[in-house]
Amino acid sequence: MSITRPSPPPHPHPTWPVVASGIVALAVAMGVGRFAFTPLMPLMMRDGTLSAAAGAEWAAANYGGYLVGALTASWFSGNPRRGLLLSLIGVALTTLATAGADAIPGAFAGVLLRAAAGVFSAWALVCASSWCLAELARRQVSQLGAWIYTGVGLGIALAGMLAWLGGRQPADWLWLELGLVAGAGALLVWAQSAGPSTAAVRMEEREATADAPDSRGGHLALVLCYGTFGFGYIVPATFLPAMARELAPDPLVFGLTWPLFGLAAALSVAAVARWLAAWPRKRIWAMAQGIMALGTALPLVVQALWAIAASAIFVGGTFMVATMAGLQLAREVRPDNPTPLLAQMTAAFAAGQIAGPLVVRAIGSGRCAGGDALGWIGAAATLLLVLTALWLWRDAELSFKKPEVSLMSPNRSATAIPAFPEAGLSERLGPPDTLDADQQAAADELINGPRRGVYGPFRPLLHRPPLLQAVAKVGETLRYAGTLDDALREWTICVVAREVSNVFEWDMHLPLAEAAGVPAAALVAVEQGTPLPDDLRSDLALARTVAAELIGQHRLLDETYANAILTWGEAGTVELLTLVGYFVMVCWLMNVARTPGPA
Image 1 (cartoon, helix red, strand yellow):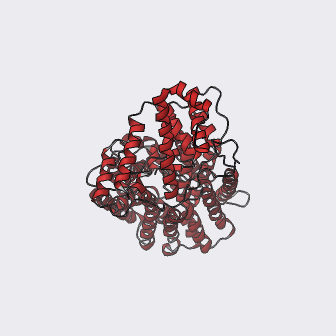
Image 2 (cartoon, rainbow, N blue to C red; image 1 turned 135 degrees about the horizontal axis):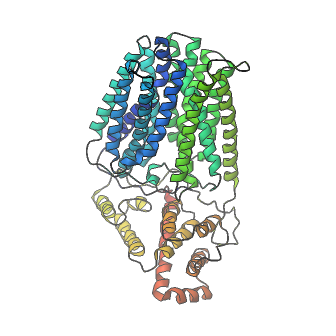
Image 3 (cartoon, rainbow, N blue to C red; image 1 turned 120 degrees about the vertical axis):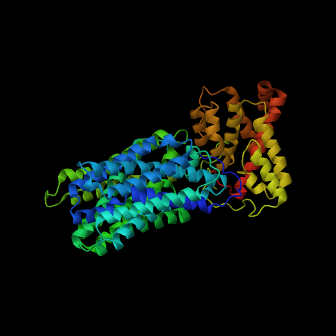
């Protein structure tokens, strides 16, 4: 399942500066800070300023720095824009300094610079996500957040094109040129991001909305799959231009592989964001990992430039898709607290990508059993990618075929009504494109009230401002001025949402119920249609019975009514009945409107 938070209402400020800032920031941070070394390494080897062994050490240092940066990026949680600008300046300075790394005394100057660039690029990725997605959420265009990640591929393509077109220059000159580009990008982000700042959003607001309920198990398998992805993609991502250089020493020929890699990354992210948003994350990840395996295998069996170019497209076109899908899946399987799983997956990914170049370095330039280091690592990566892709696809298939259970009426067939049939479908009755004065006034009341935004049922209700205001008042009374305790109220809302198969209220109130102290086992029982735990509070069990009878039979049995009066009294019973009726009403409205889950 996906647990996200509501989108804020329309915002008067334009969105394009935010999207453009995110794209430019990630292009600088990743295209230059992380990956510029890949197209420049064969040129440095040509110039005699870098050996293959030292190149592997530089690459590993950058990956290690990236891990350190990811673990320390929370320092900027209070002001992500400041962290973003600081990190982009750091990328620019380390890139400029790399131009003179061979003139700096000591063998480890380049290693330290690449490690620092890794730290800065990780900070930029986290801070760009935090600041850009928060600003887009304020403008109620959270769906545009995925597009900022096209900047990674665009930055890689830009760095690759610069190395390709200027490949006959000394590599040191190209480092200087890239450093100037990074500095210009930092200035552009500073200019476009100037203005009112937004506090960083919570983790669940930074993640894109996942699509369907999924298994809560298999965490170790997911971590291993993500680590395999890091190991599998990093060898071609690091050594493809060098492999191409062995076949064609002209930089205008071998240098084209990296621009192709970046262009494929940008286009693939855009395509998934546009056309595959409703696909299960495991299937997208499995598909990406399988195509990546084809990319790692091609250079092993075909020693030709077209195979290297195809490998660049296959690997470049999947590595950002796998990243997005893997992190979204982590959010699905641990909606209560995804941070530990995200940290484990990030650590596994970093370990995998560090291991690749180090193993190449350990094998060295010799041959073993007829193959060189890149050949053996490529074969191992292909095998591991295929195995993990098959597991992900099979697990997604098992999850997809798992029968959904309708919860309230035990007499219904388990497959009669799918759990959340509207999940992943496009919204068909959203808010008006343009707000008139009454609609704007109604929206402003919600923004300035306890809800702090226009979302959920109020998106379609915005077409009828008087009705919206009346419905909102009832909801505010029930949620913010009611007499039922938090656990009972949030539990009842979850029960109603699950019975009428409404993805918004389920995703919205599940974490609120957990925070109020509702046992996780009870919520899982509601989710799966299984018996409630024996030790569940008696009033919660009774509330489920009340909701079941009201929704299934439209009335209460005498025994249920008597128990309700005994438990809550007449006033409390009236409030509970109204709570059920109110949320049935808004859930029906959202089901028809196909209002998406909170995003």
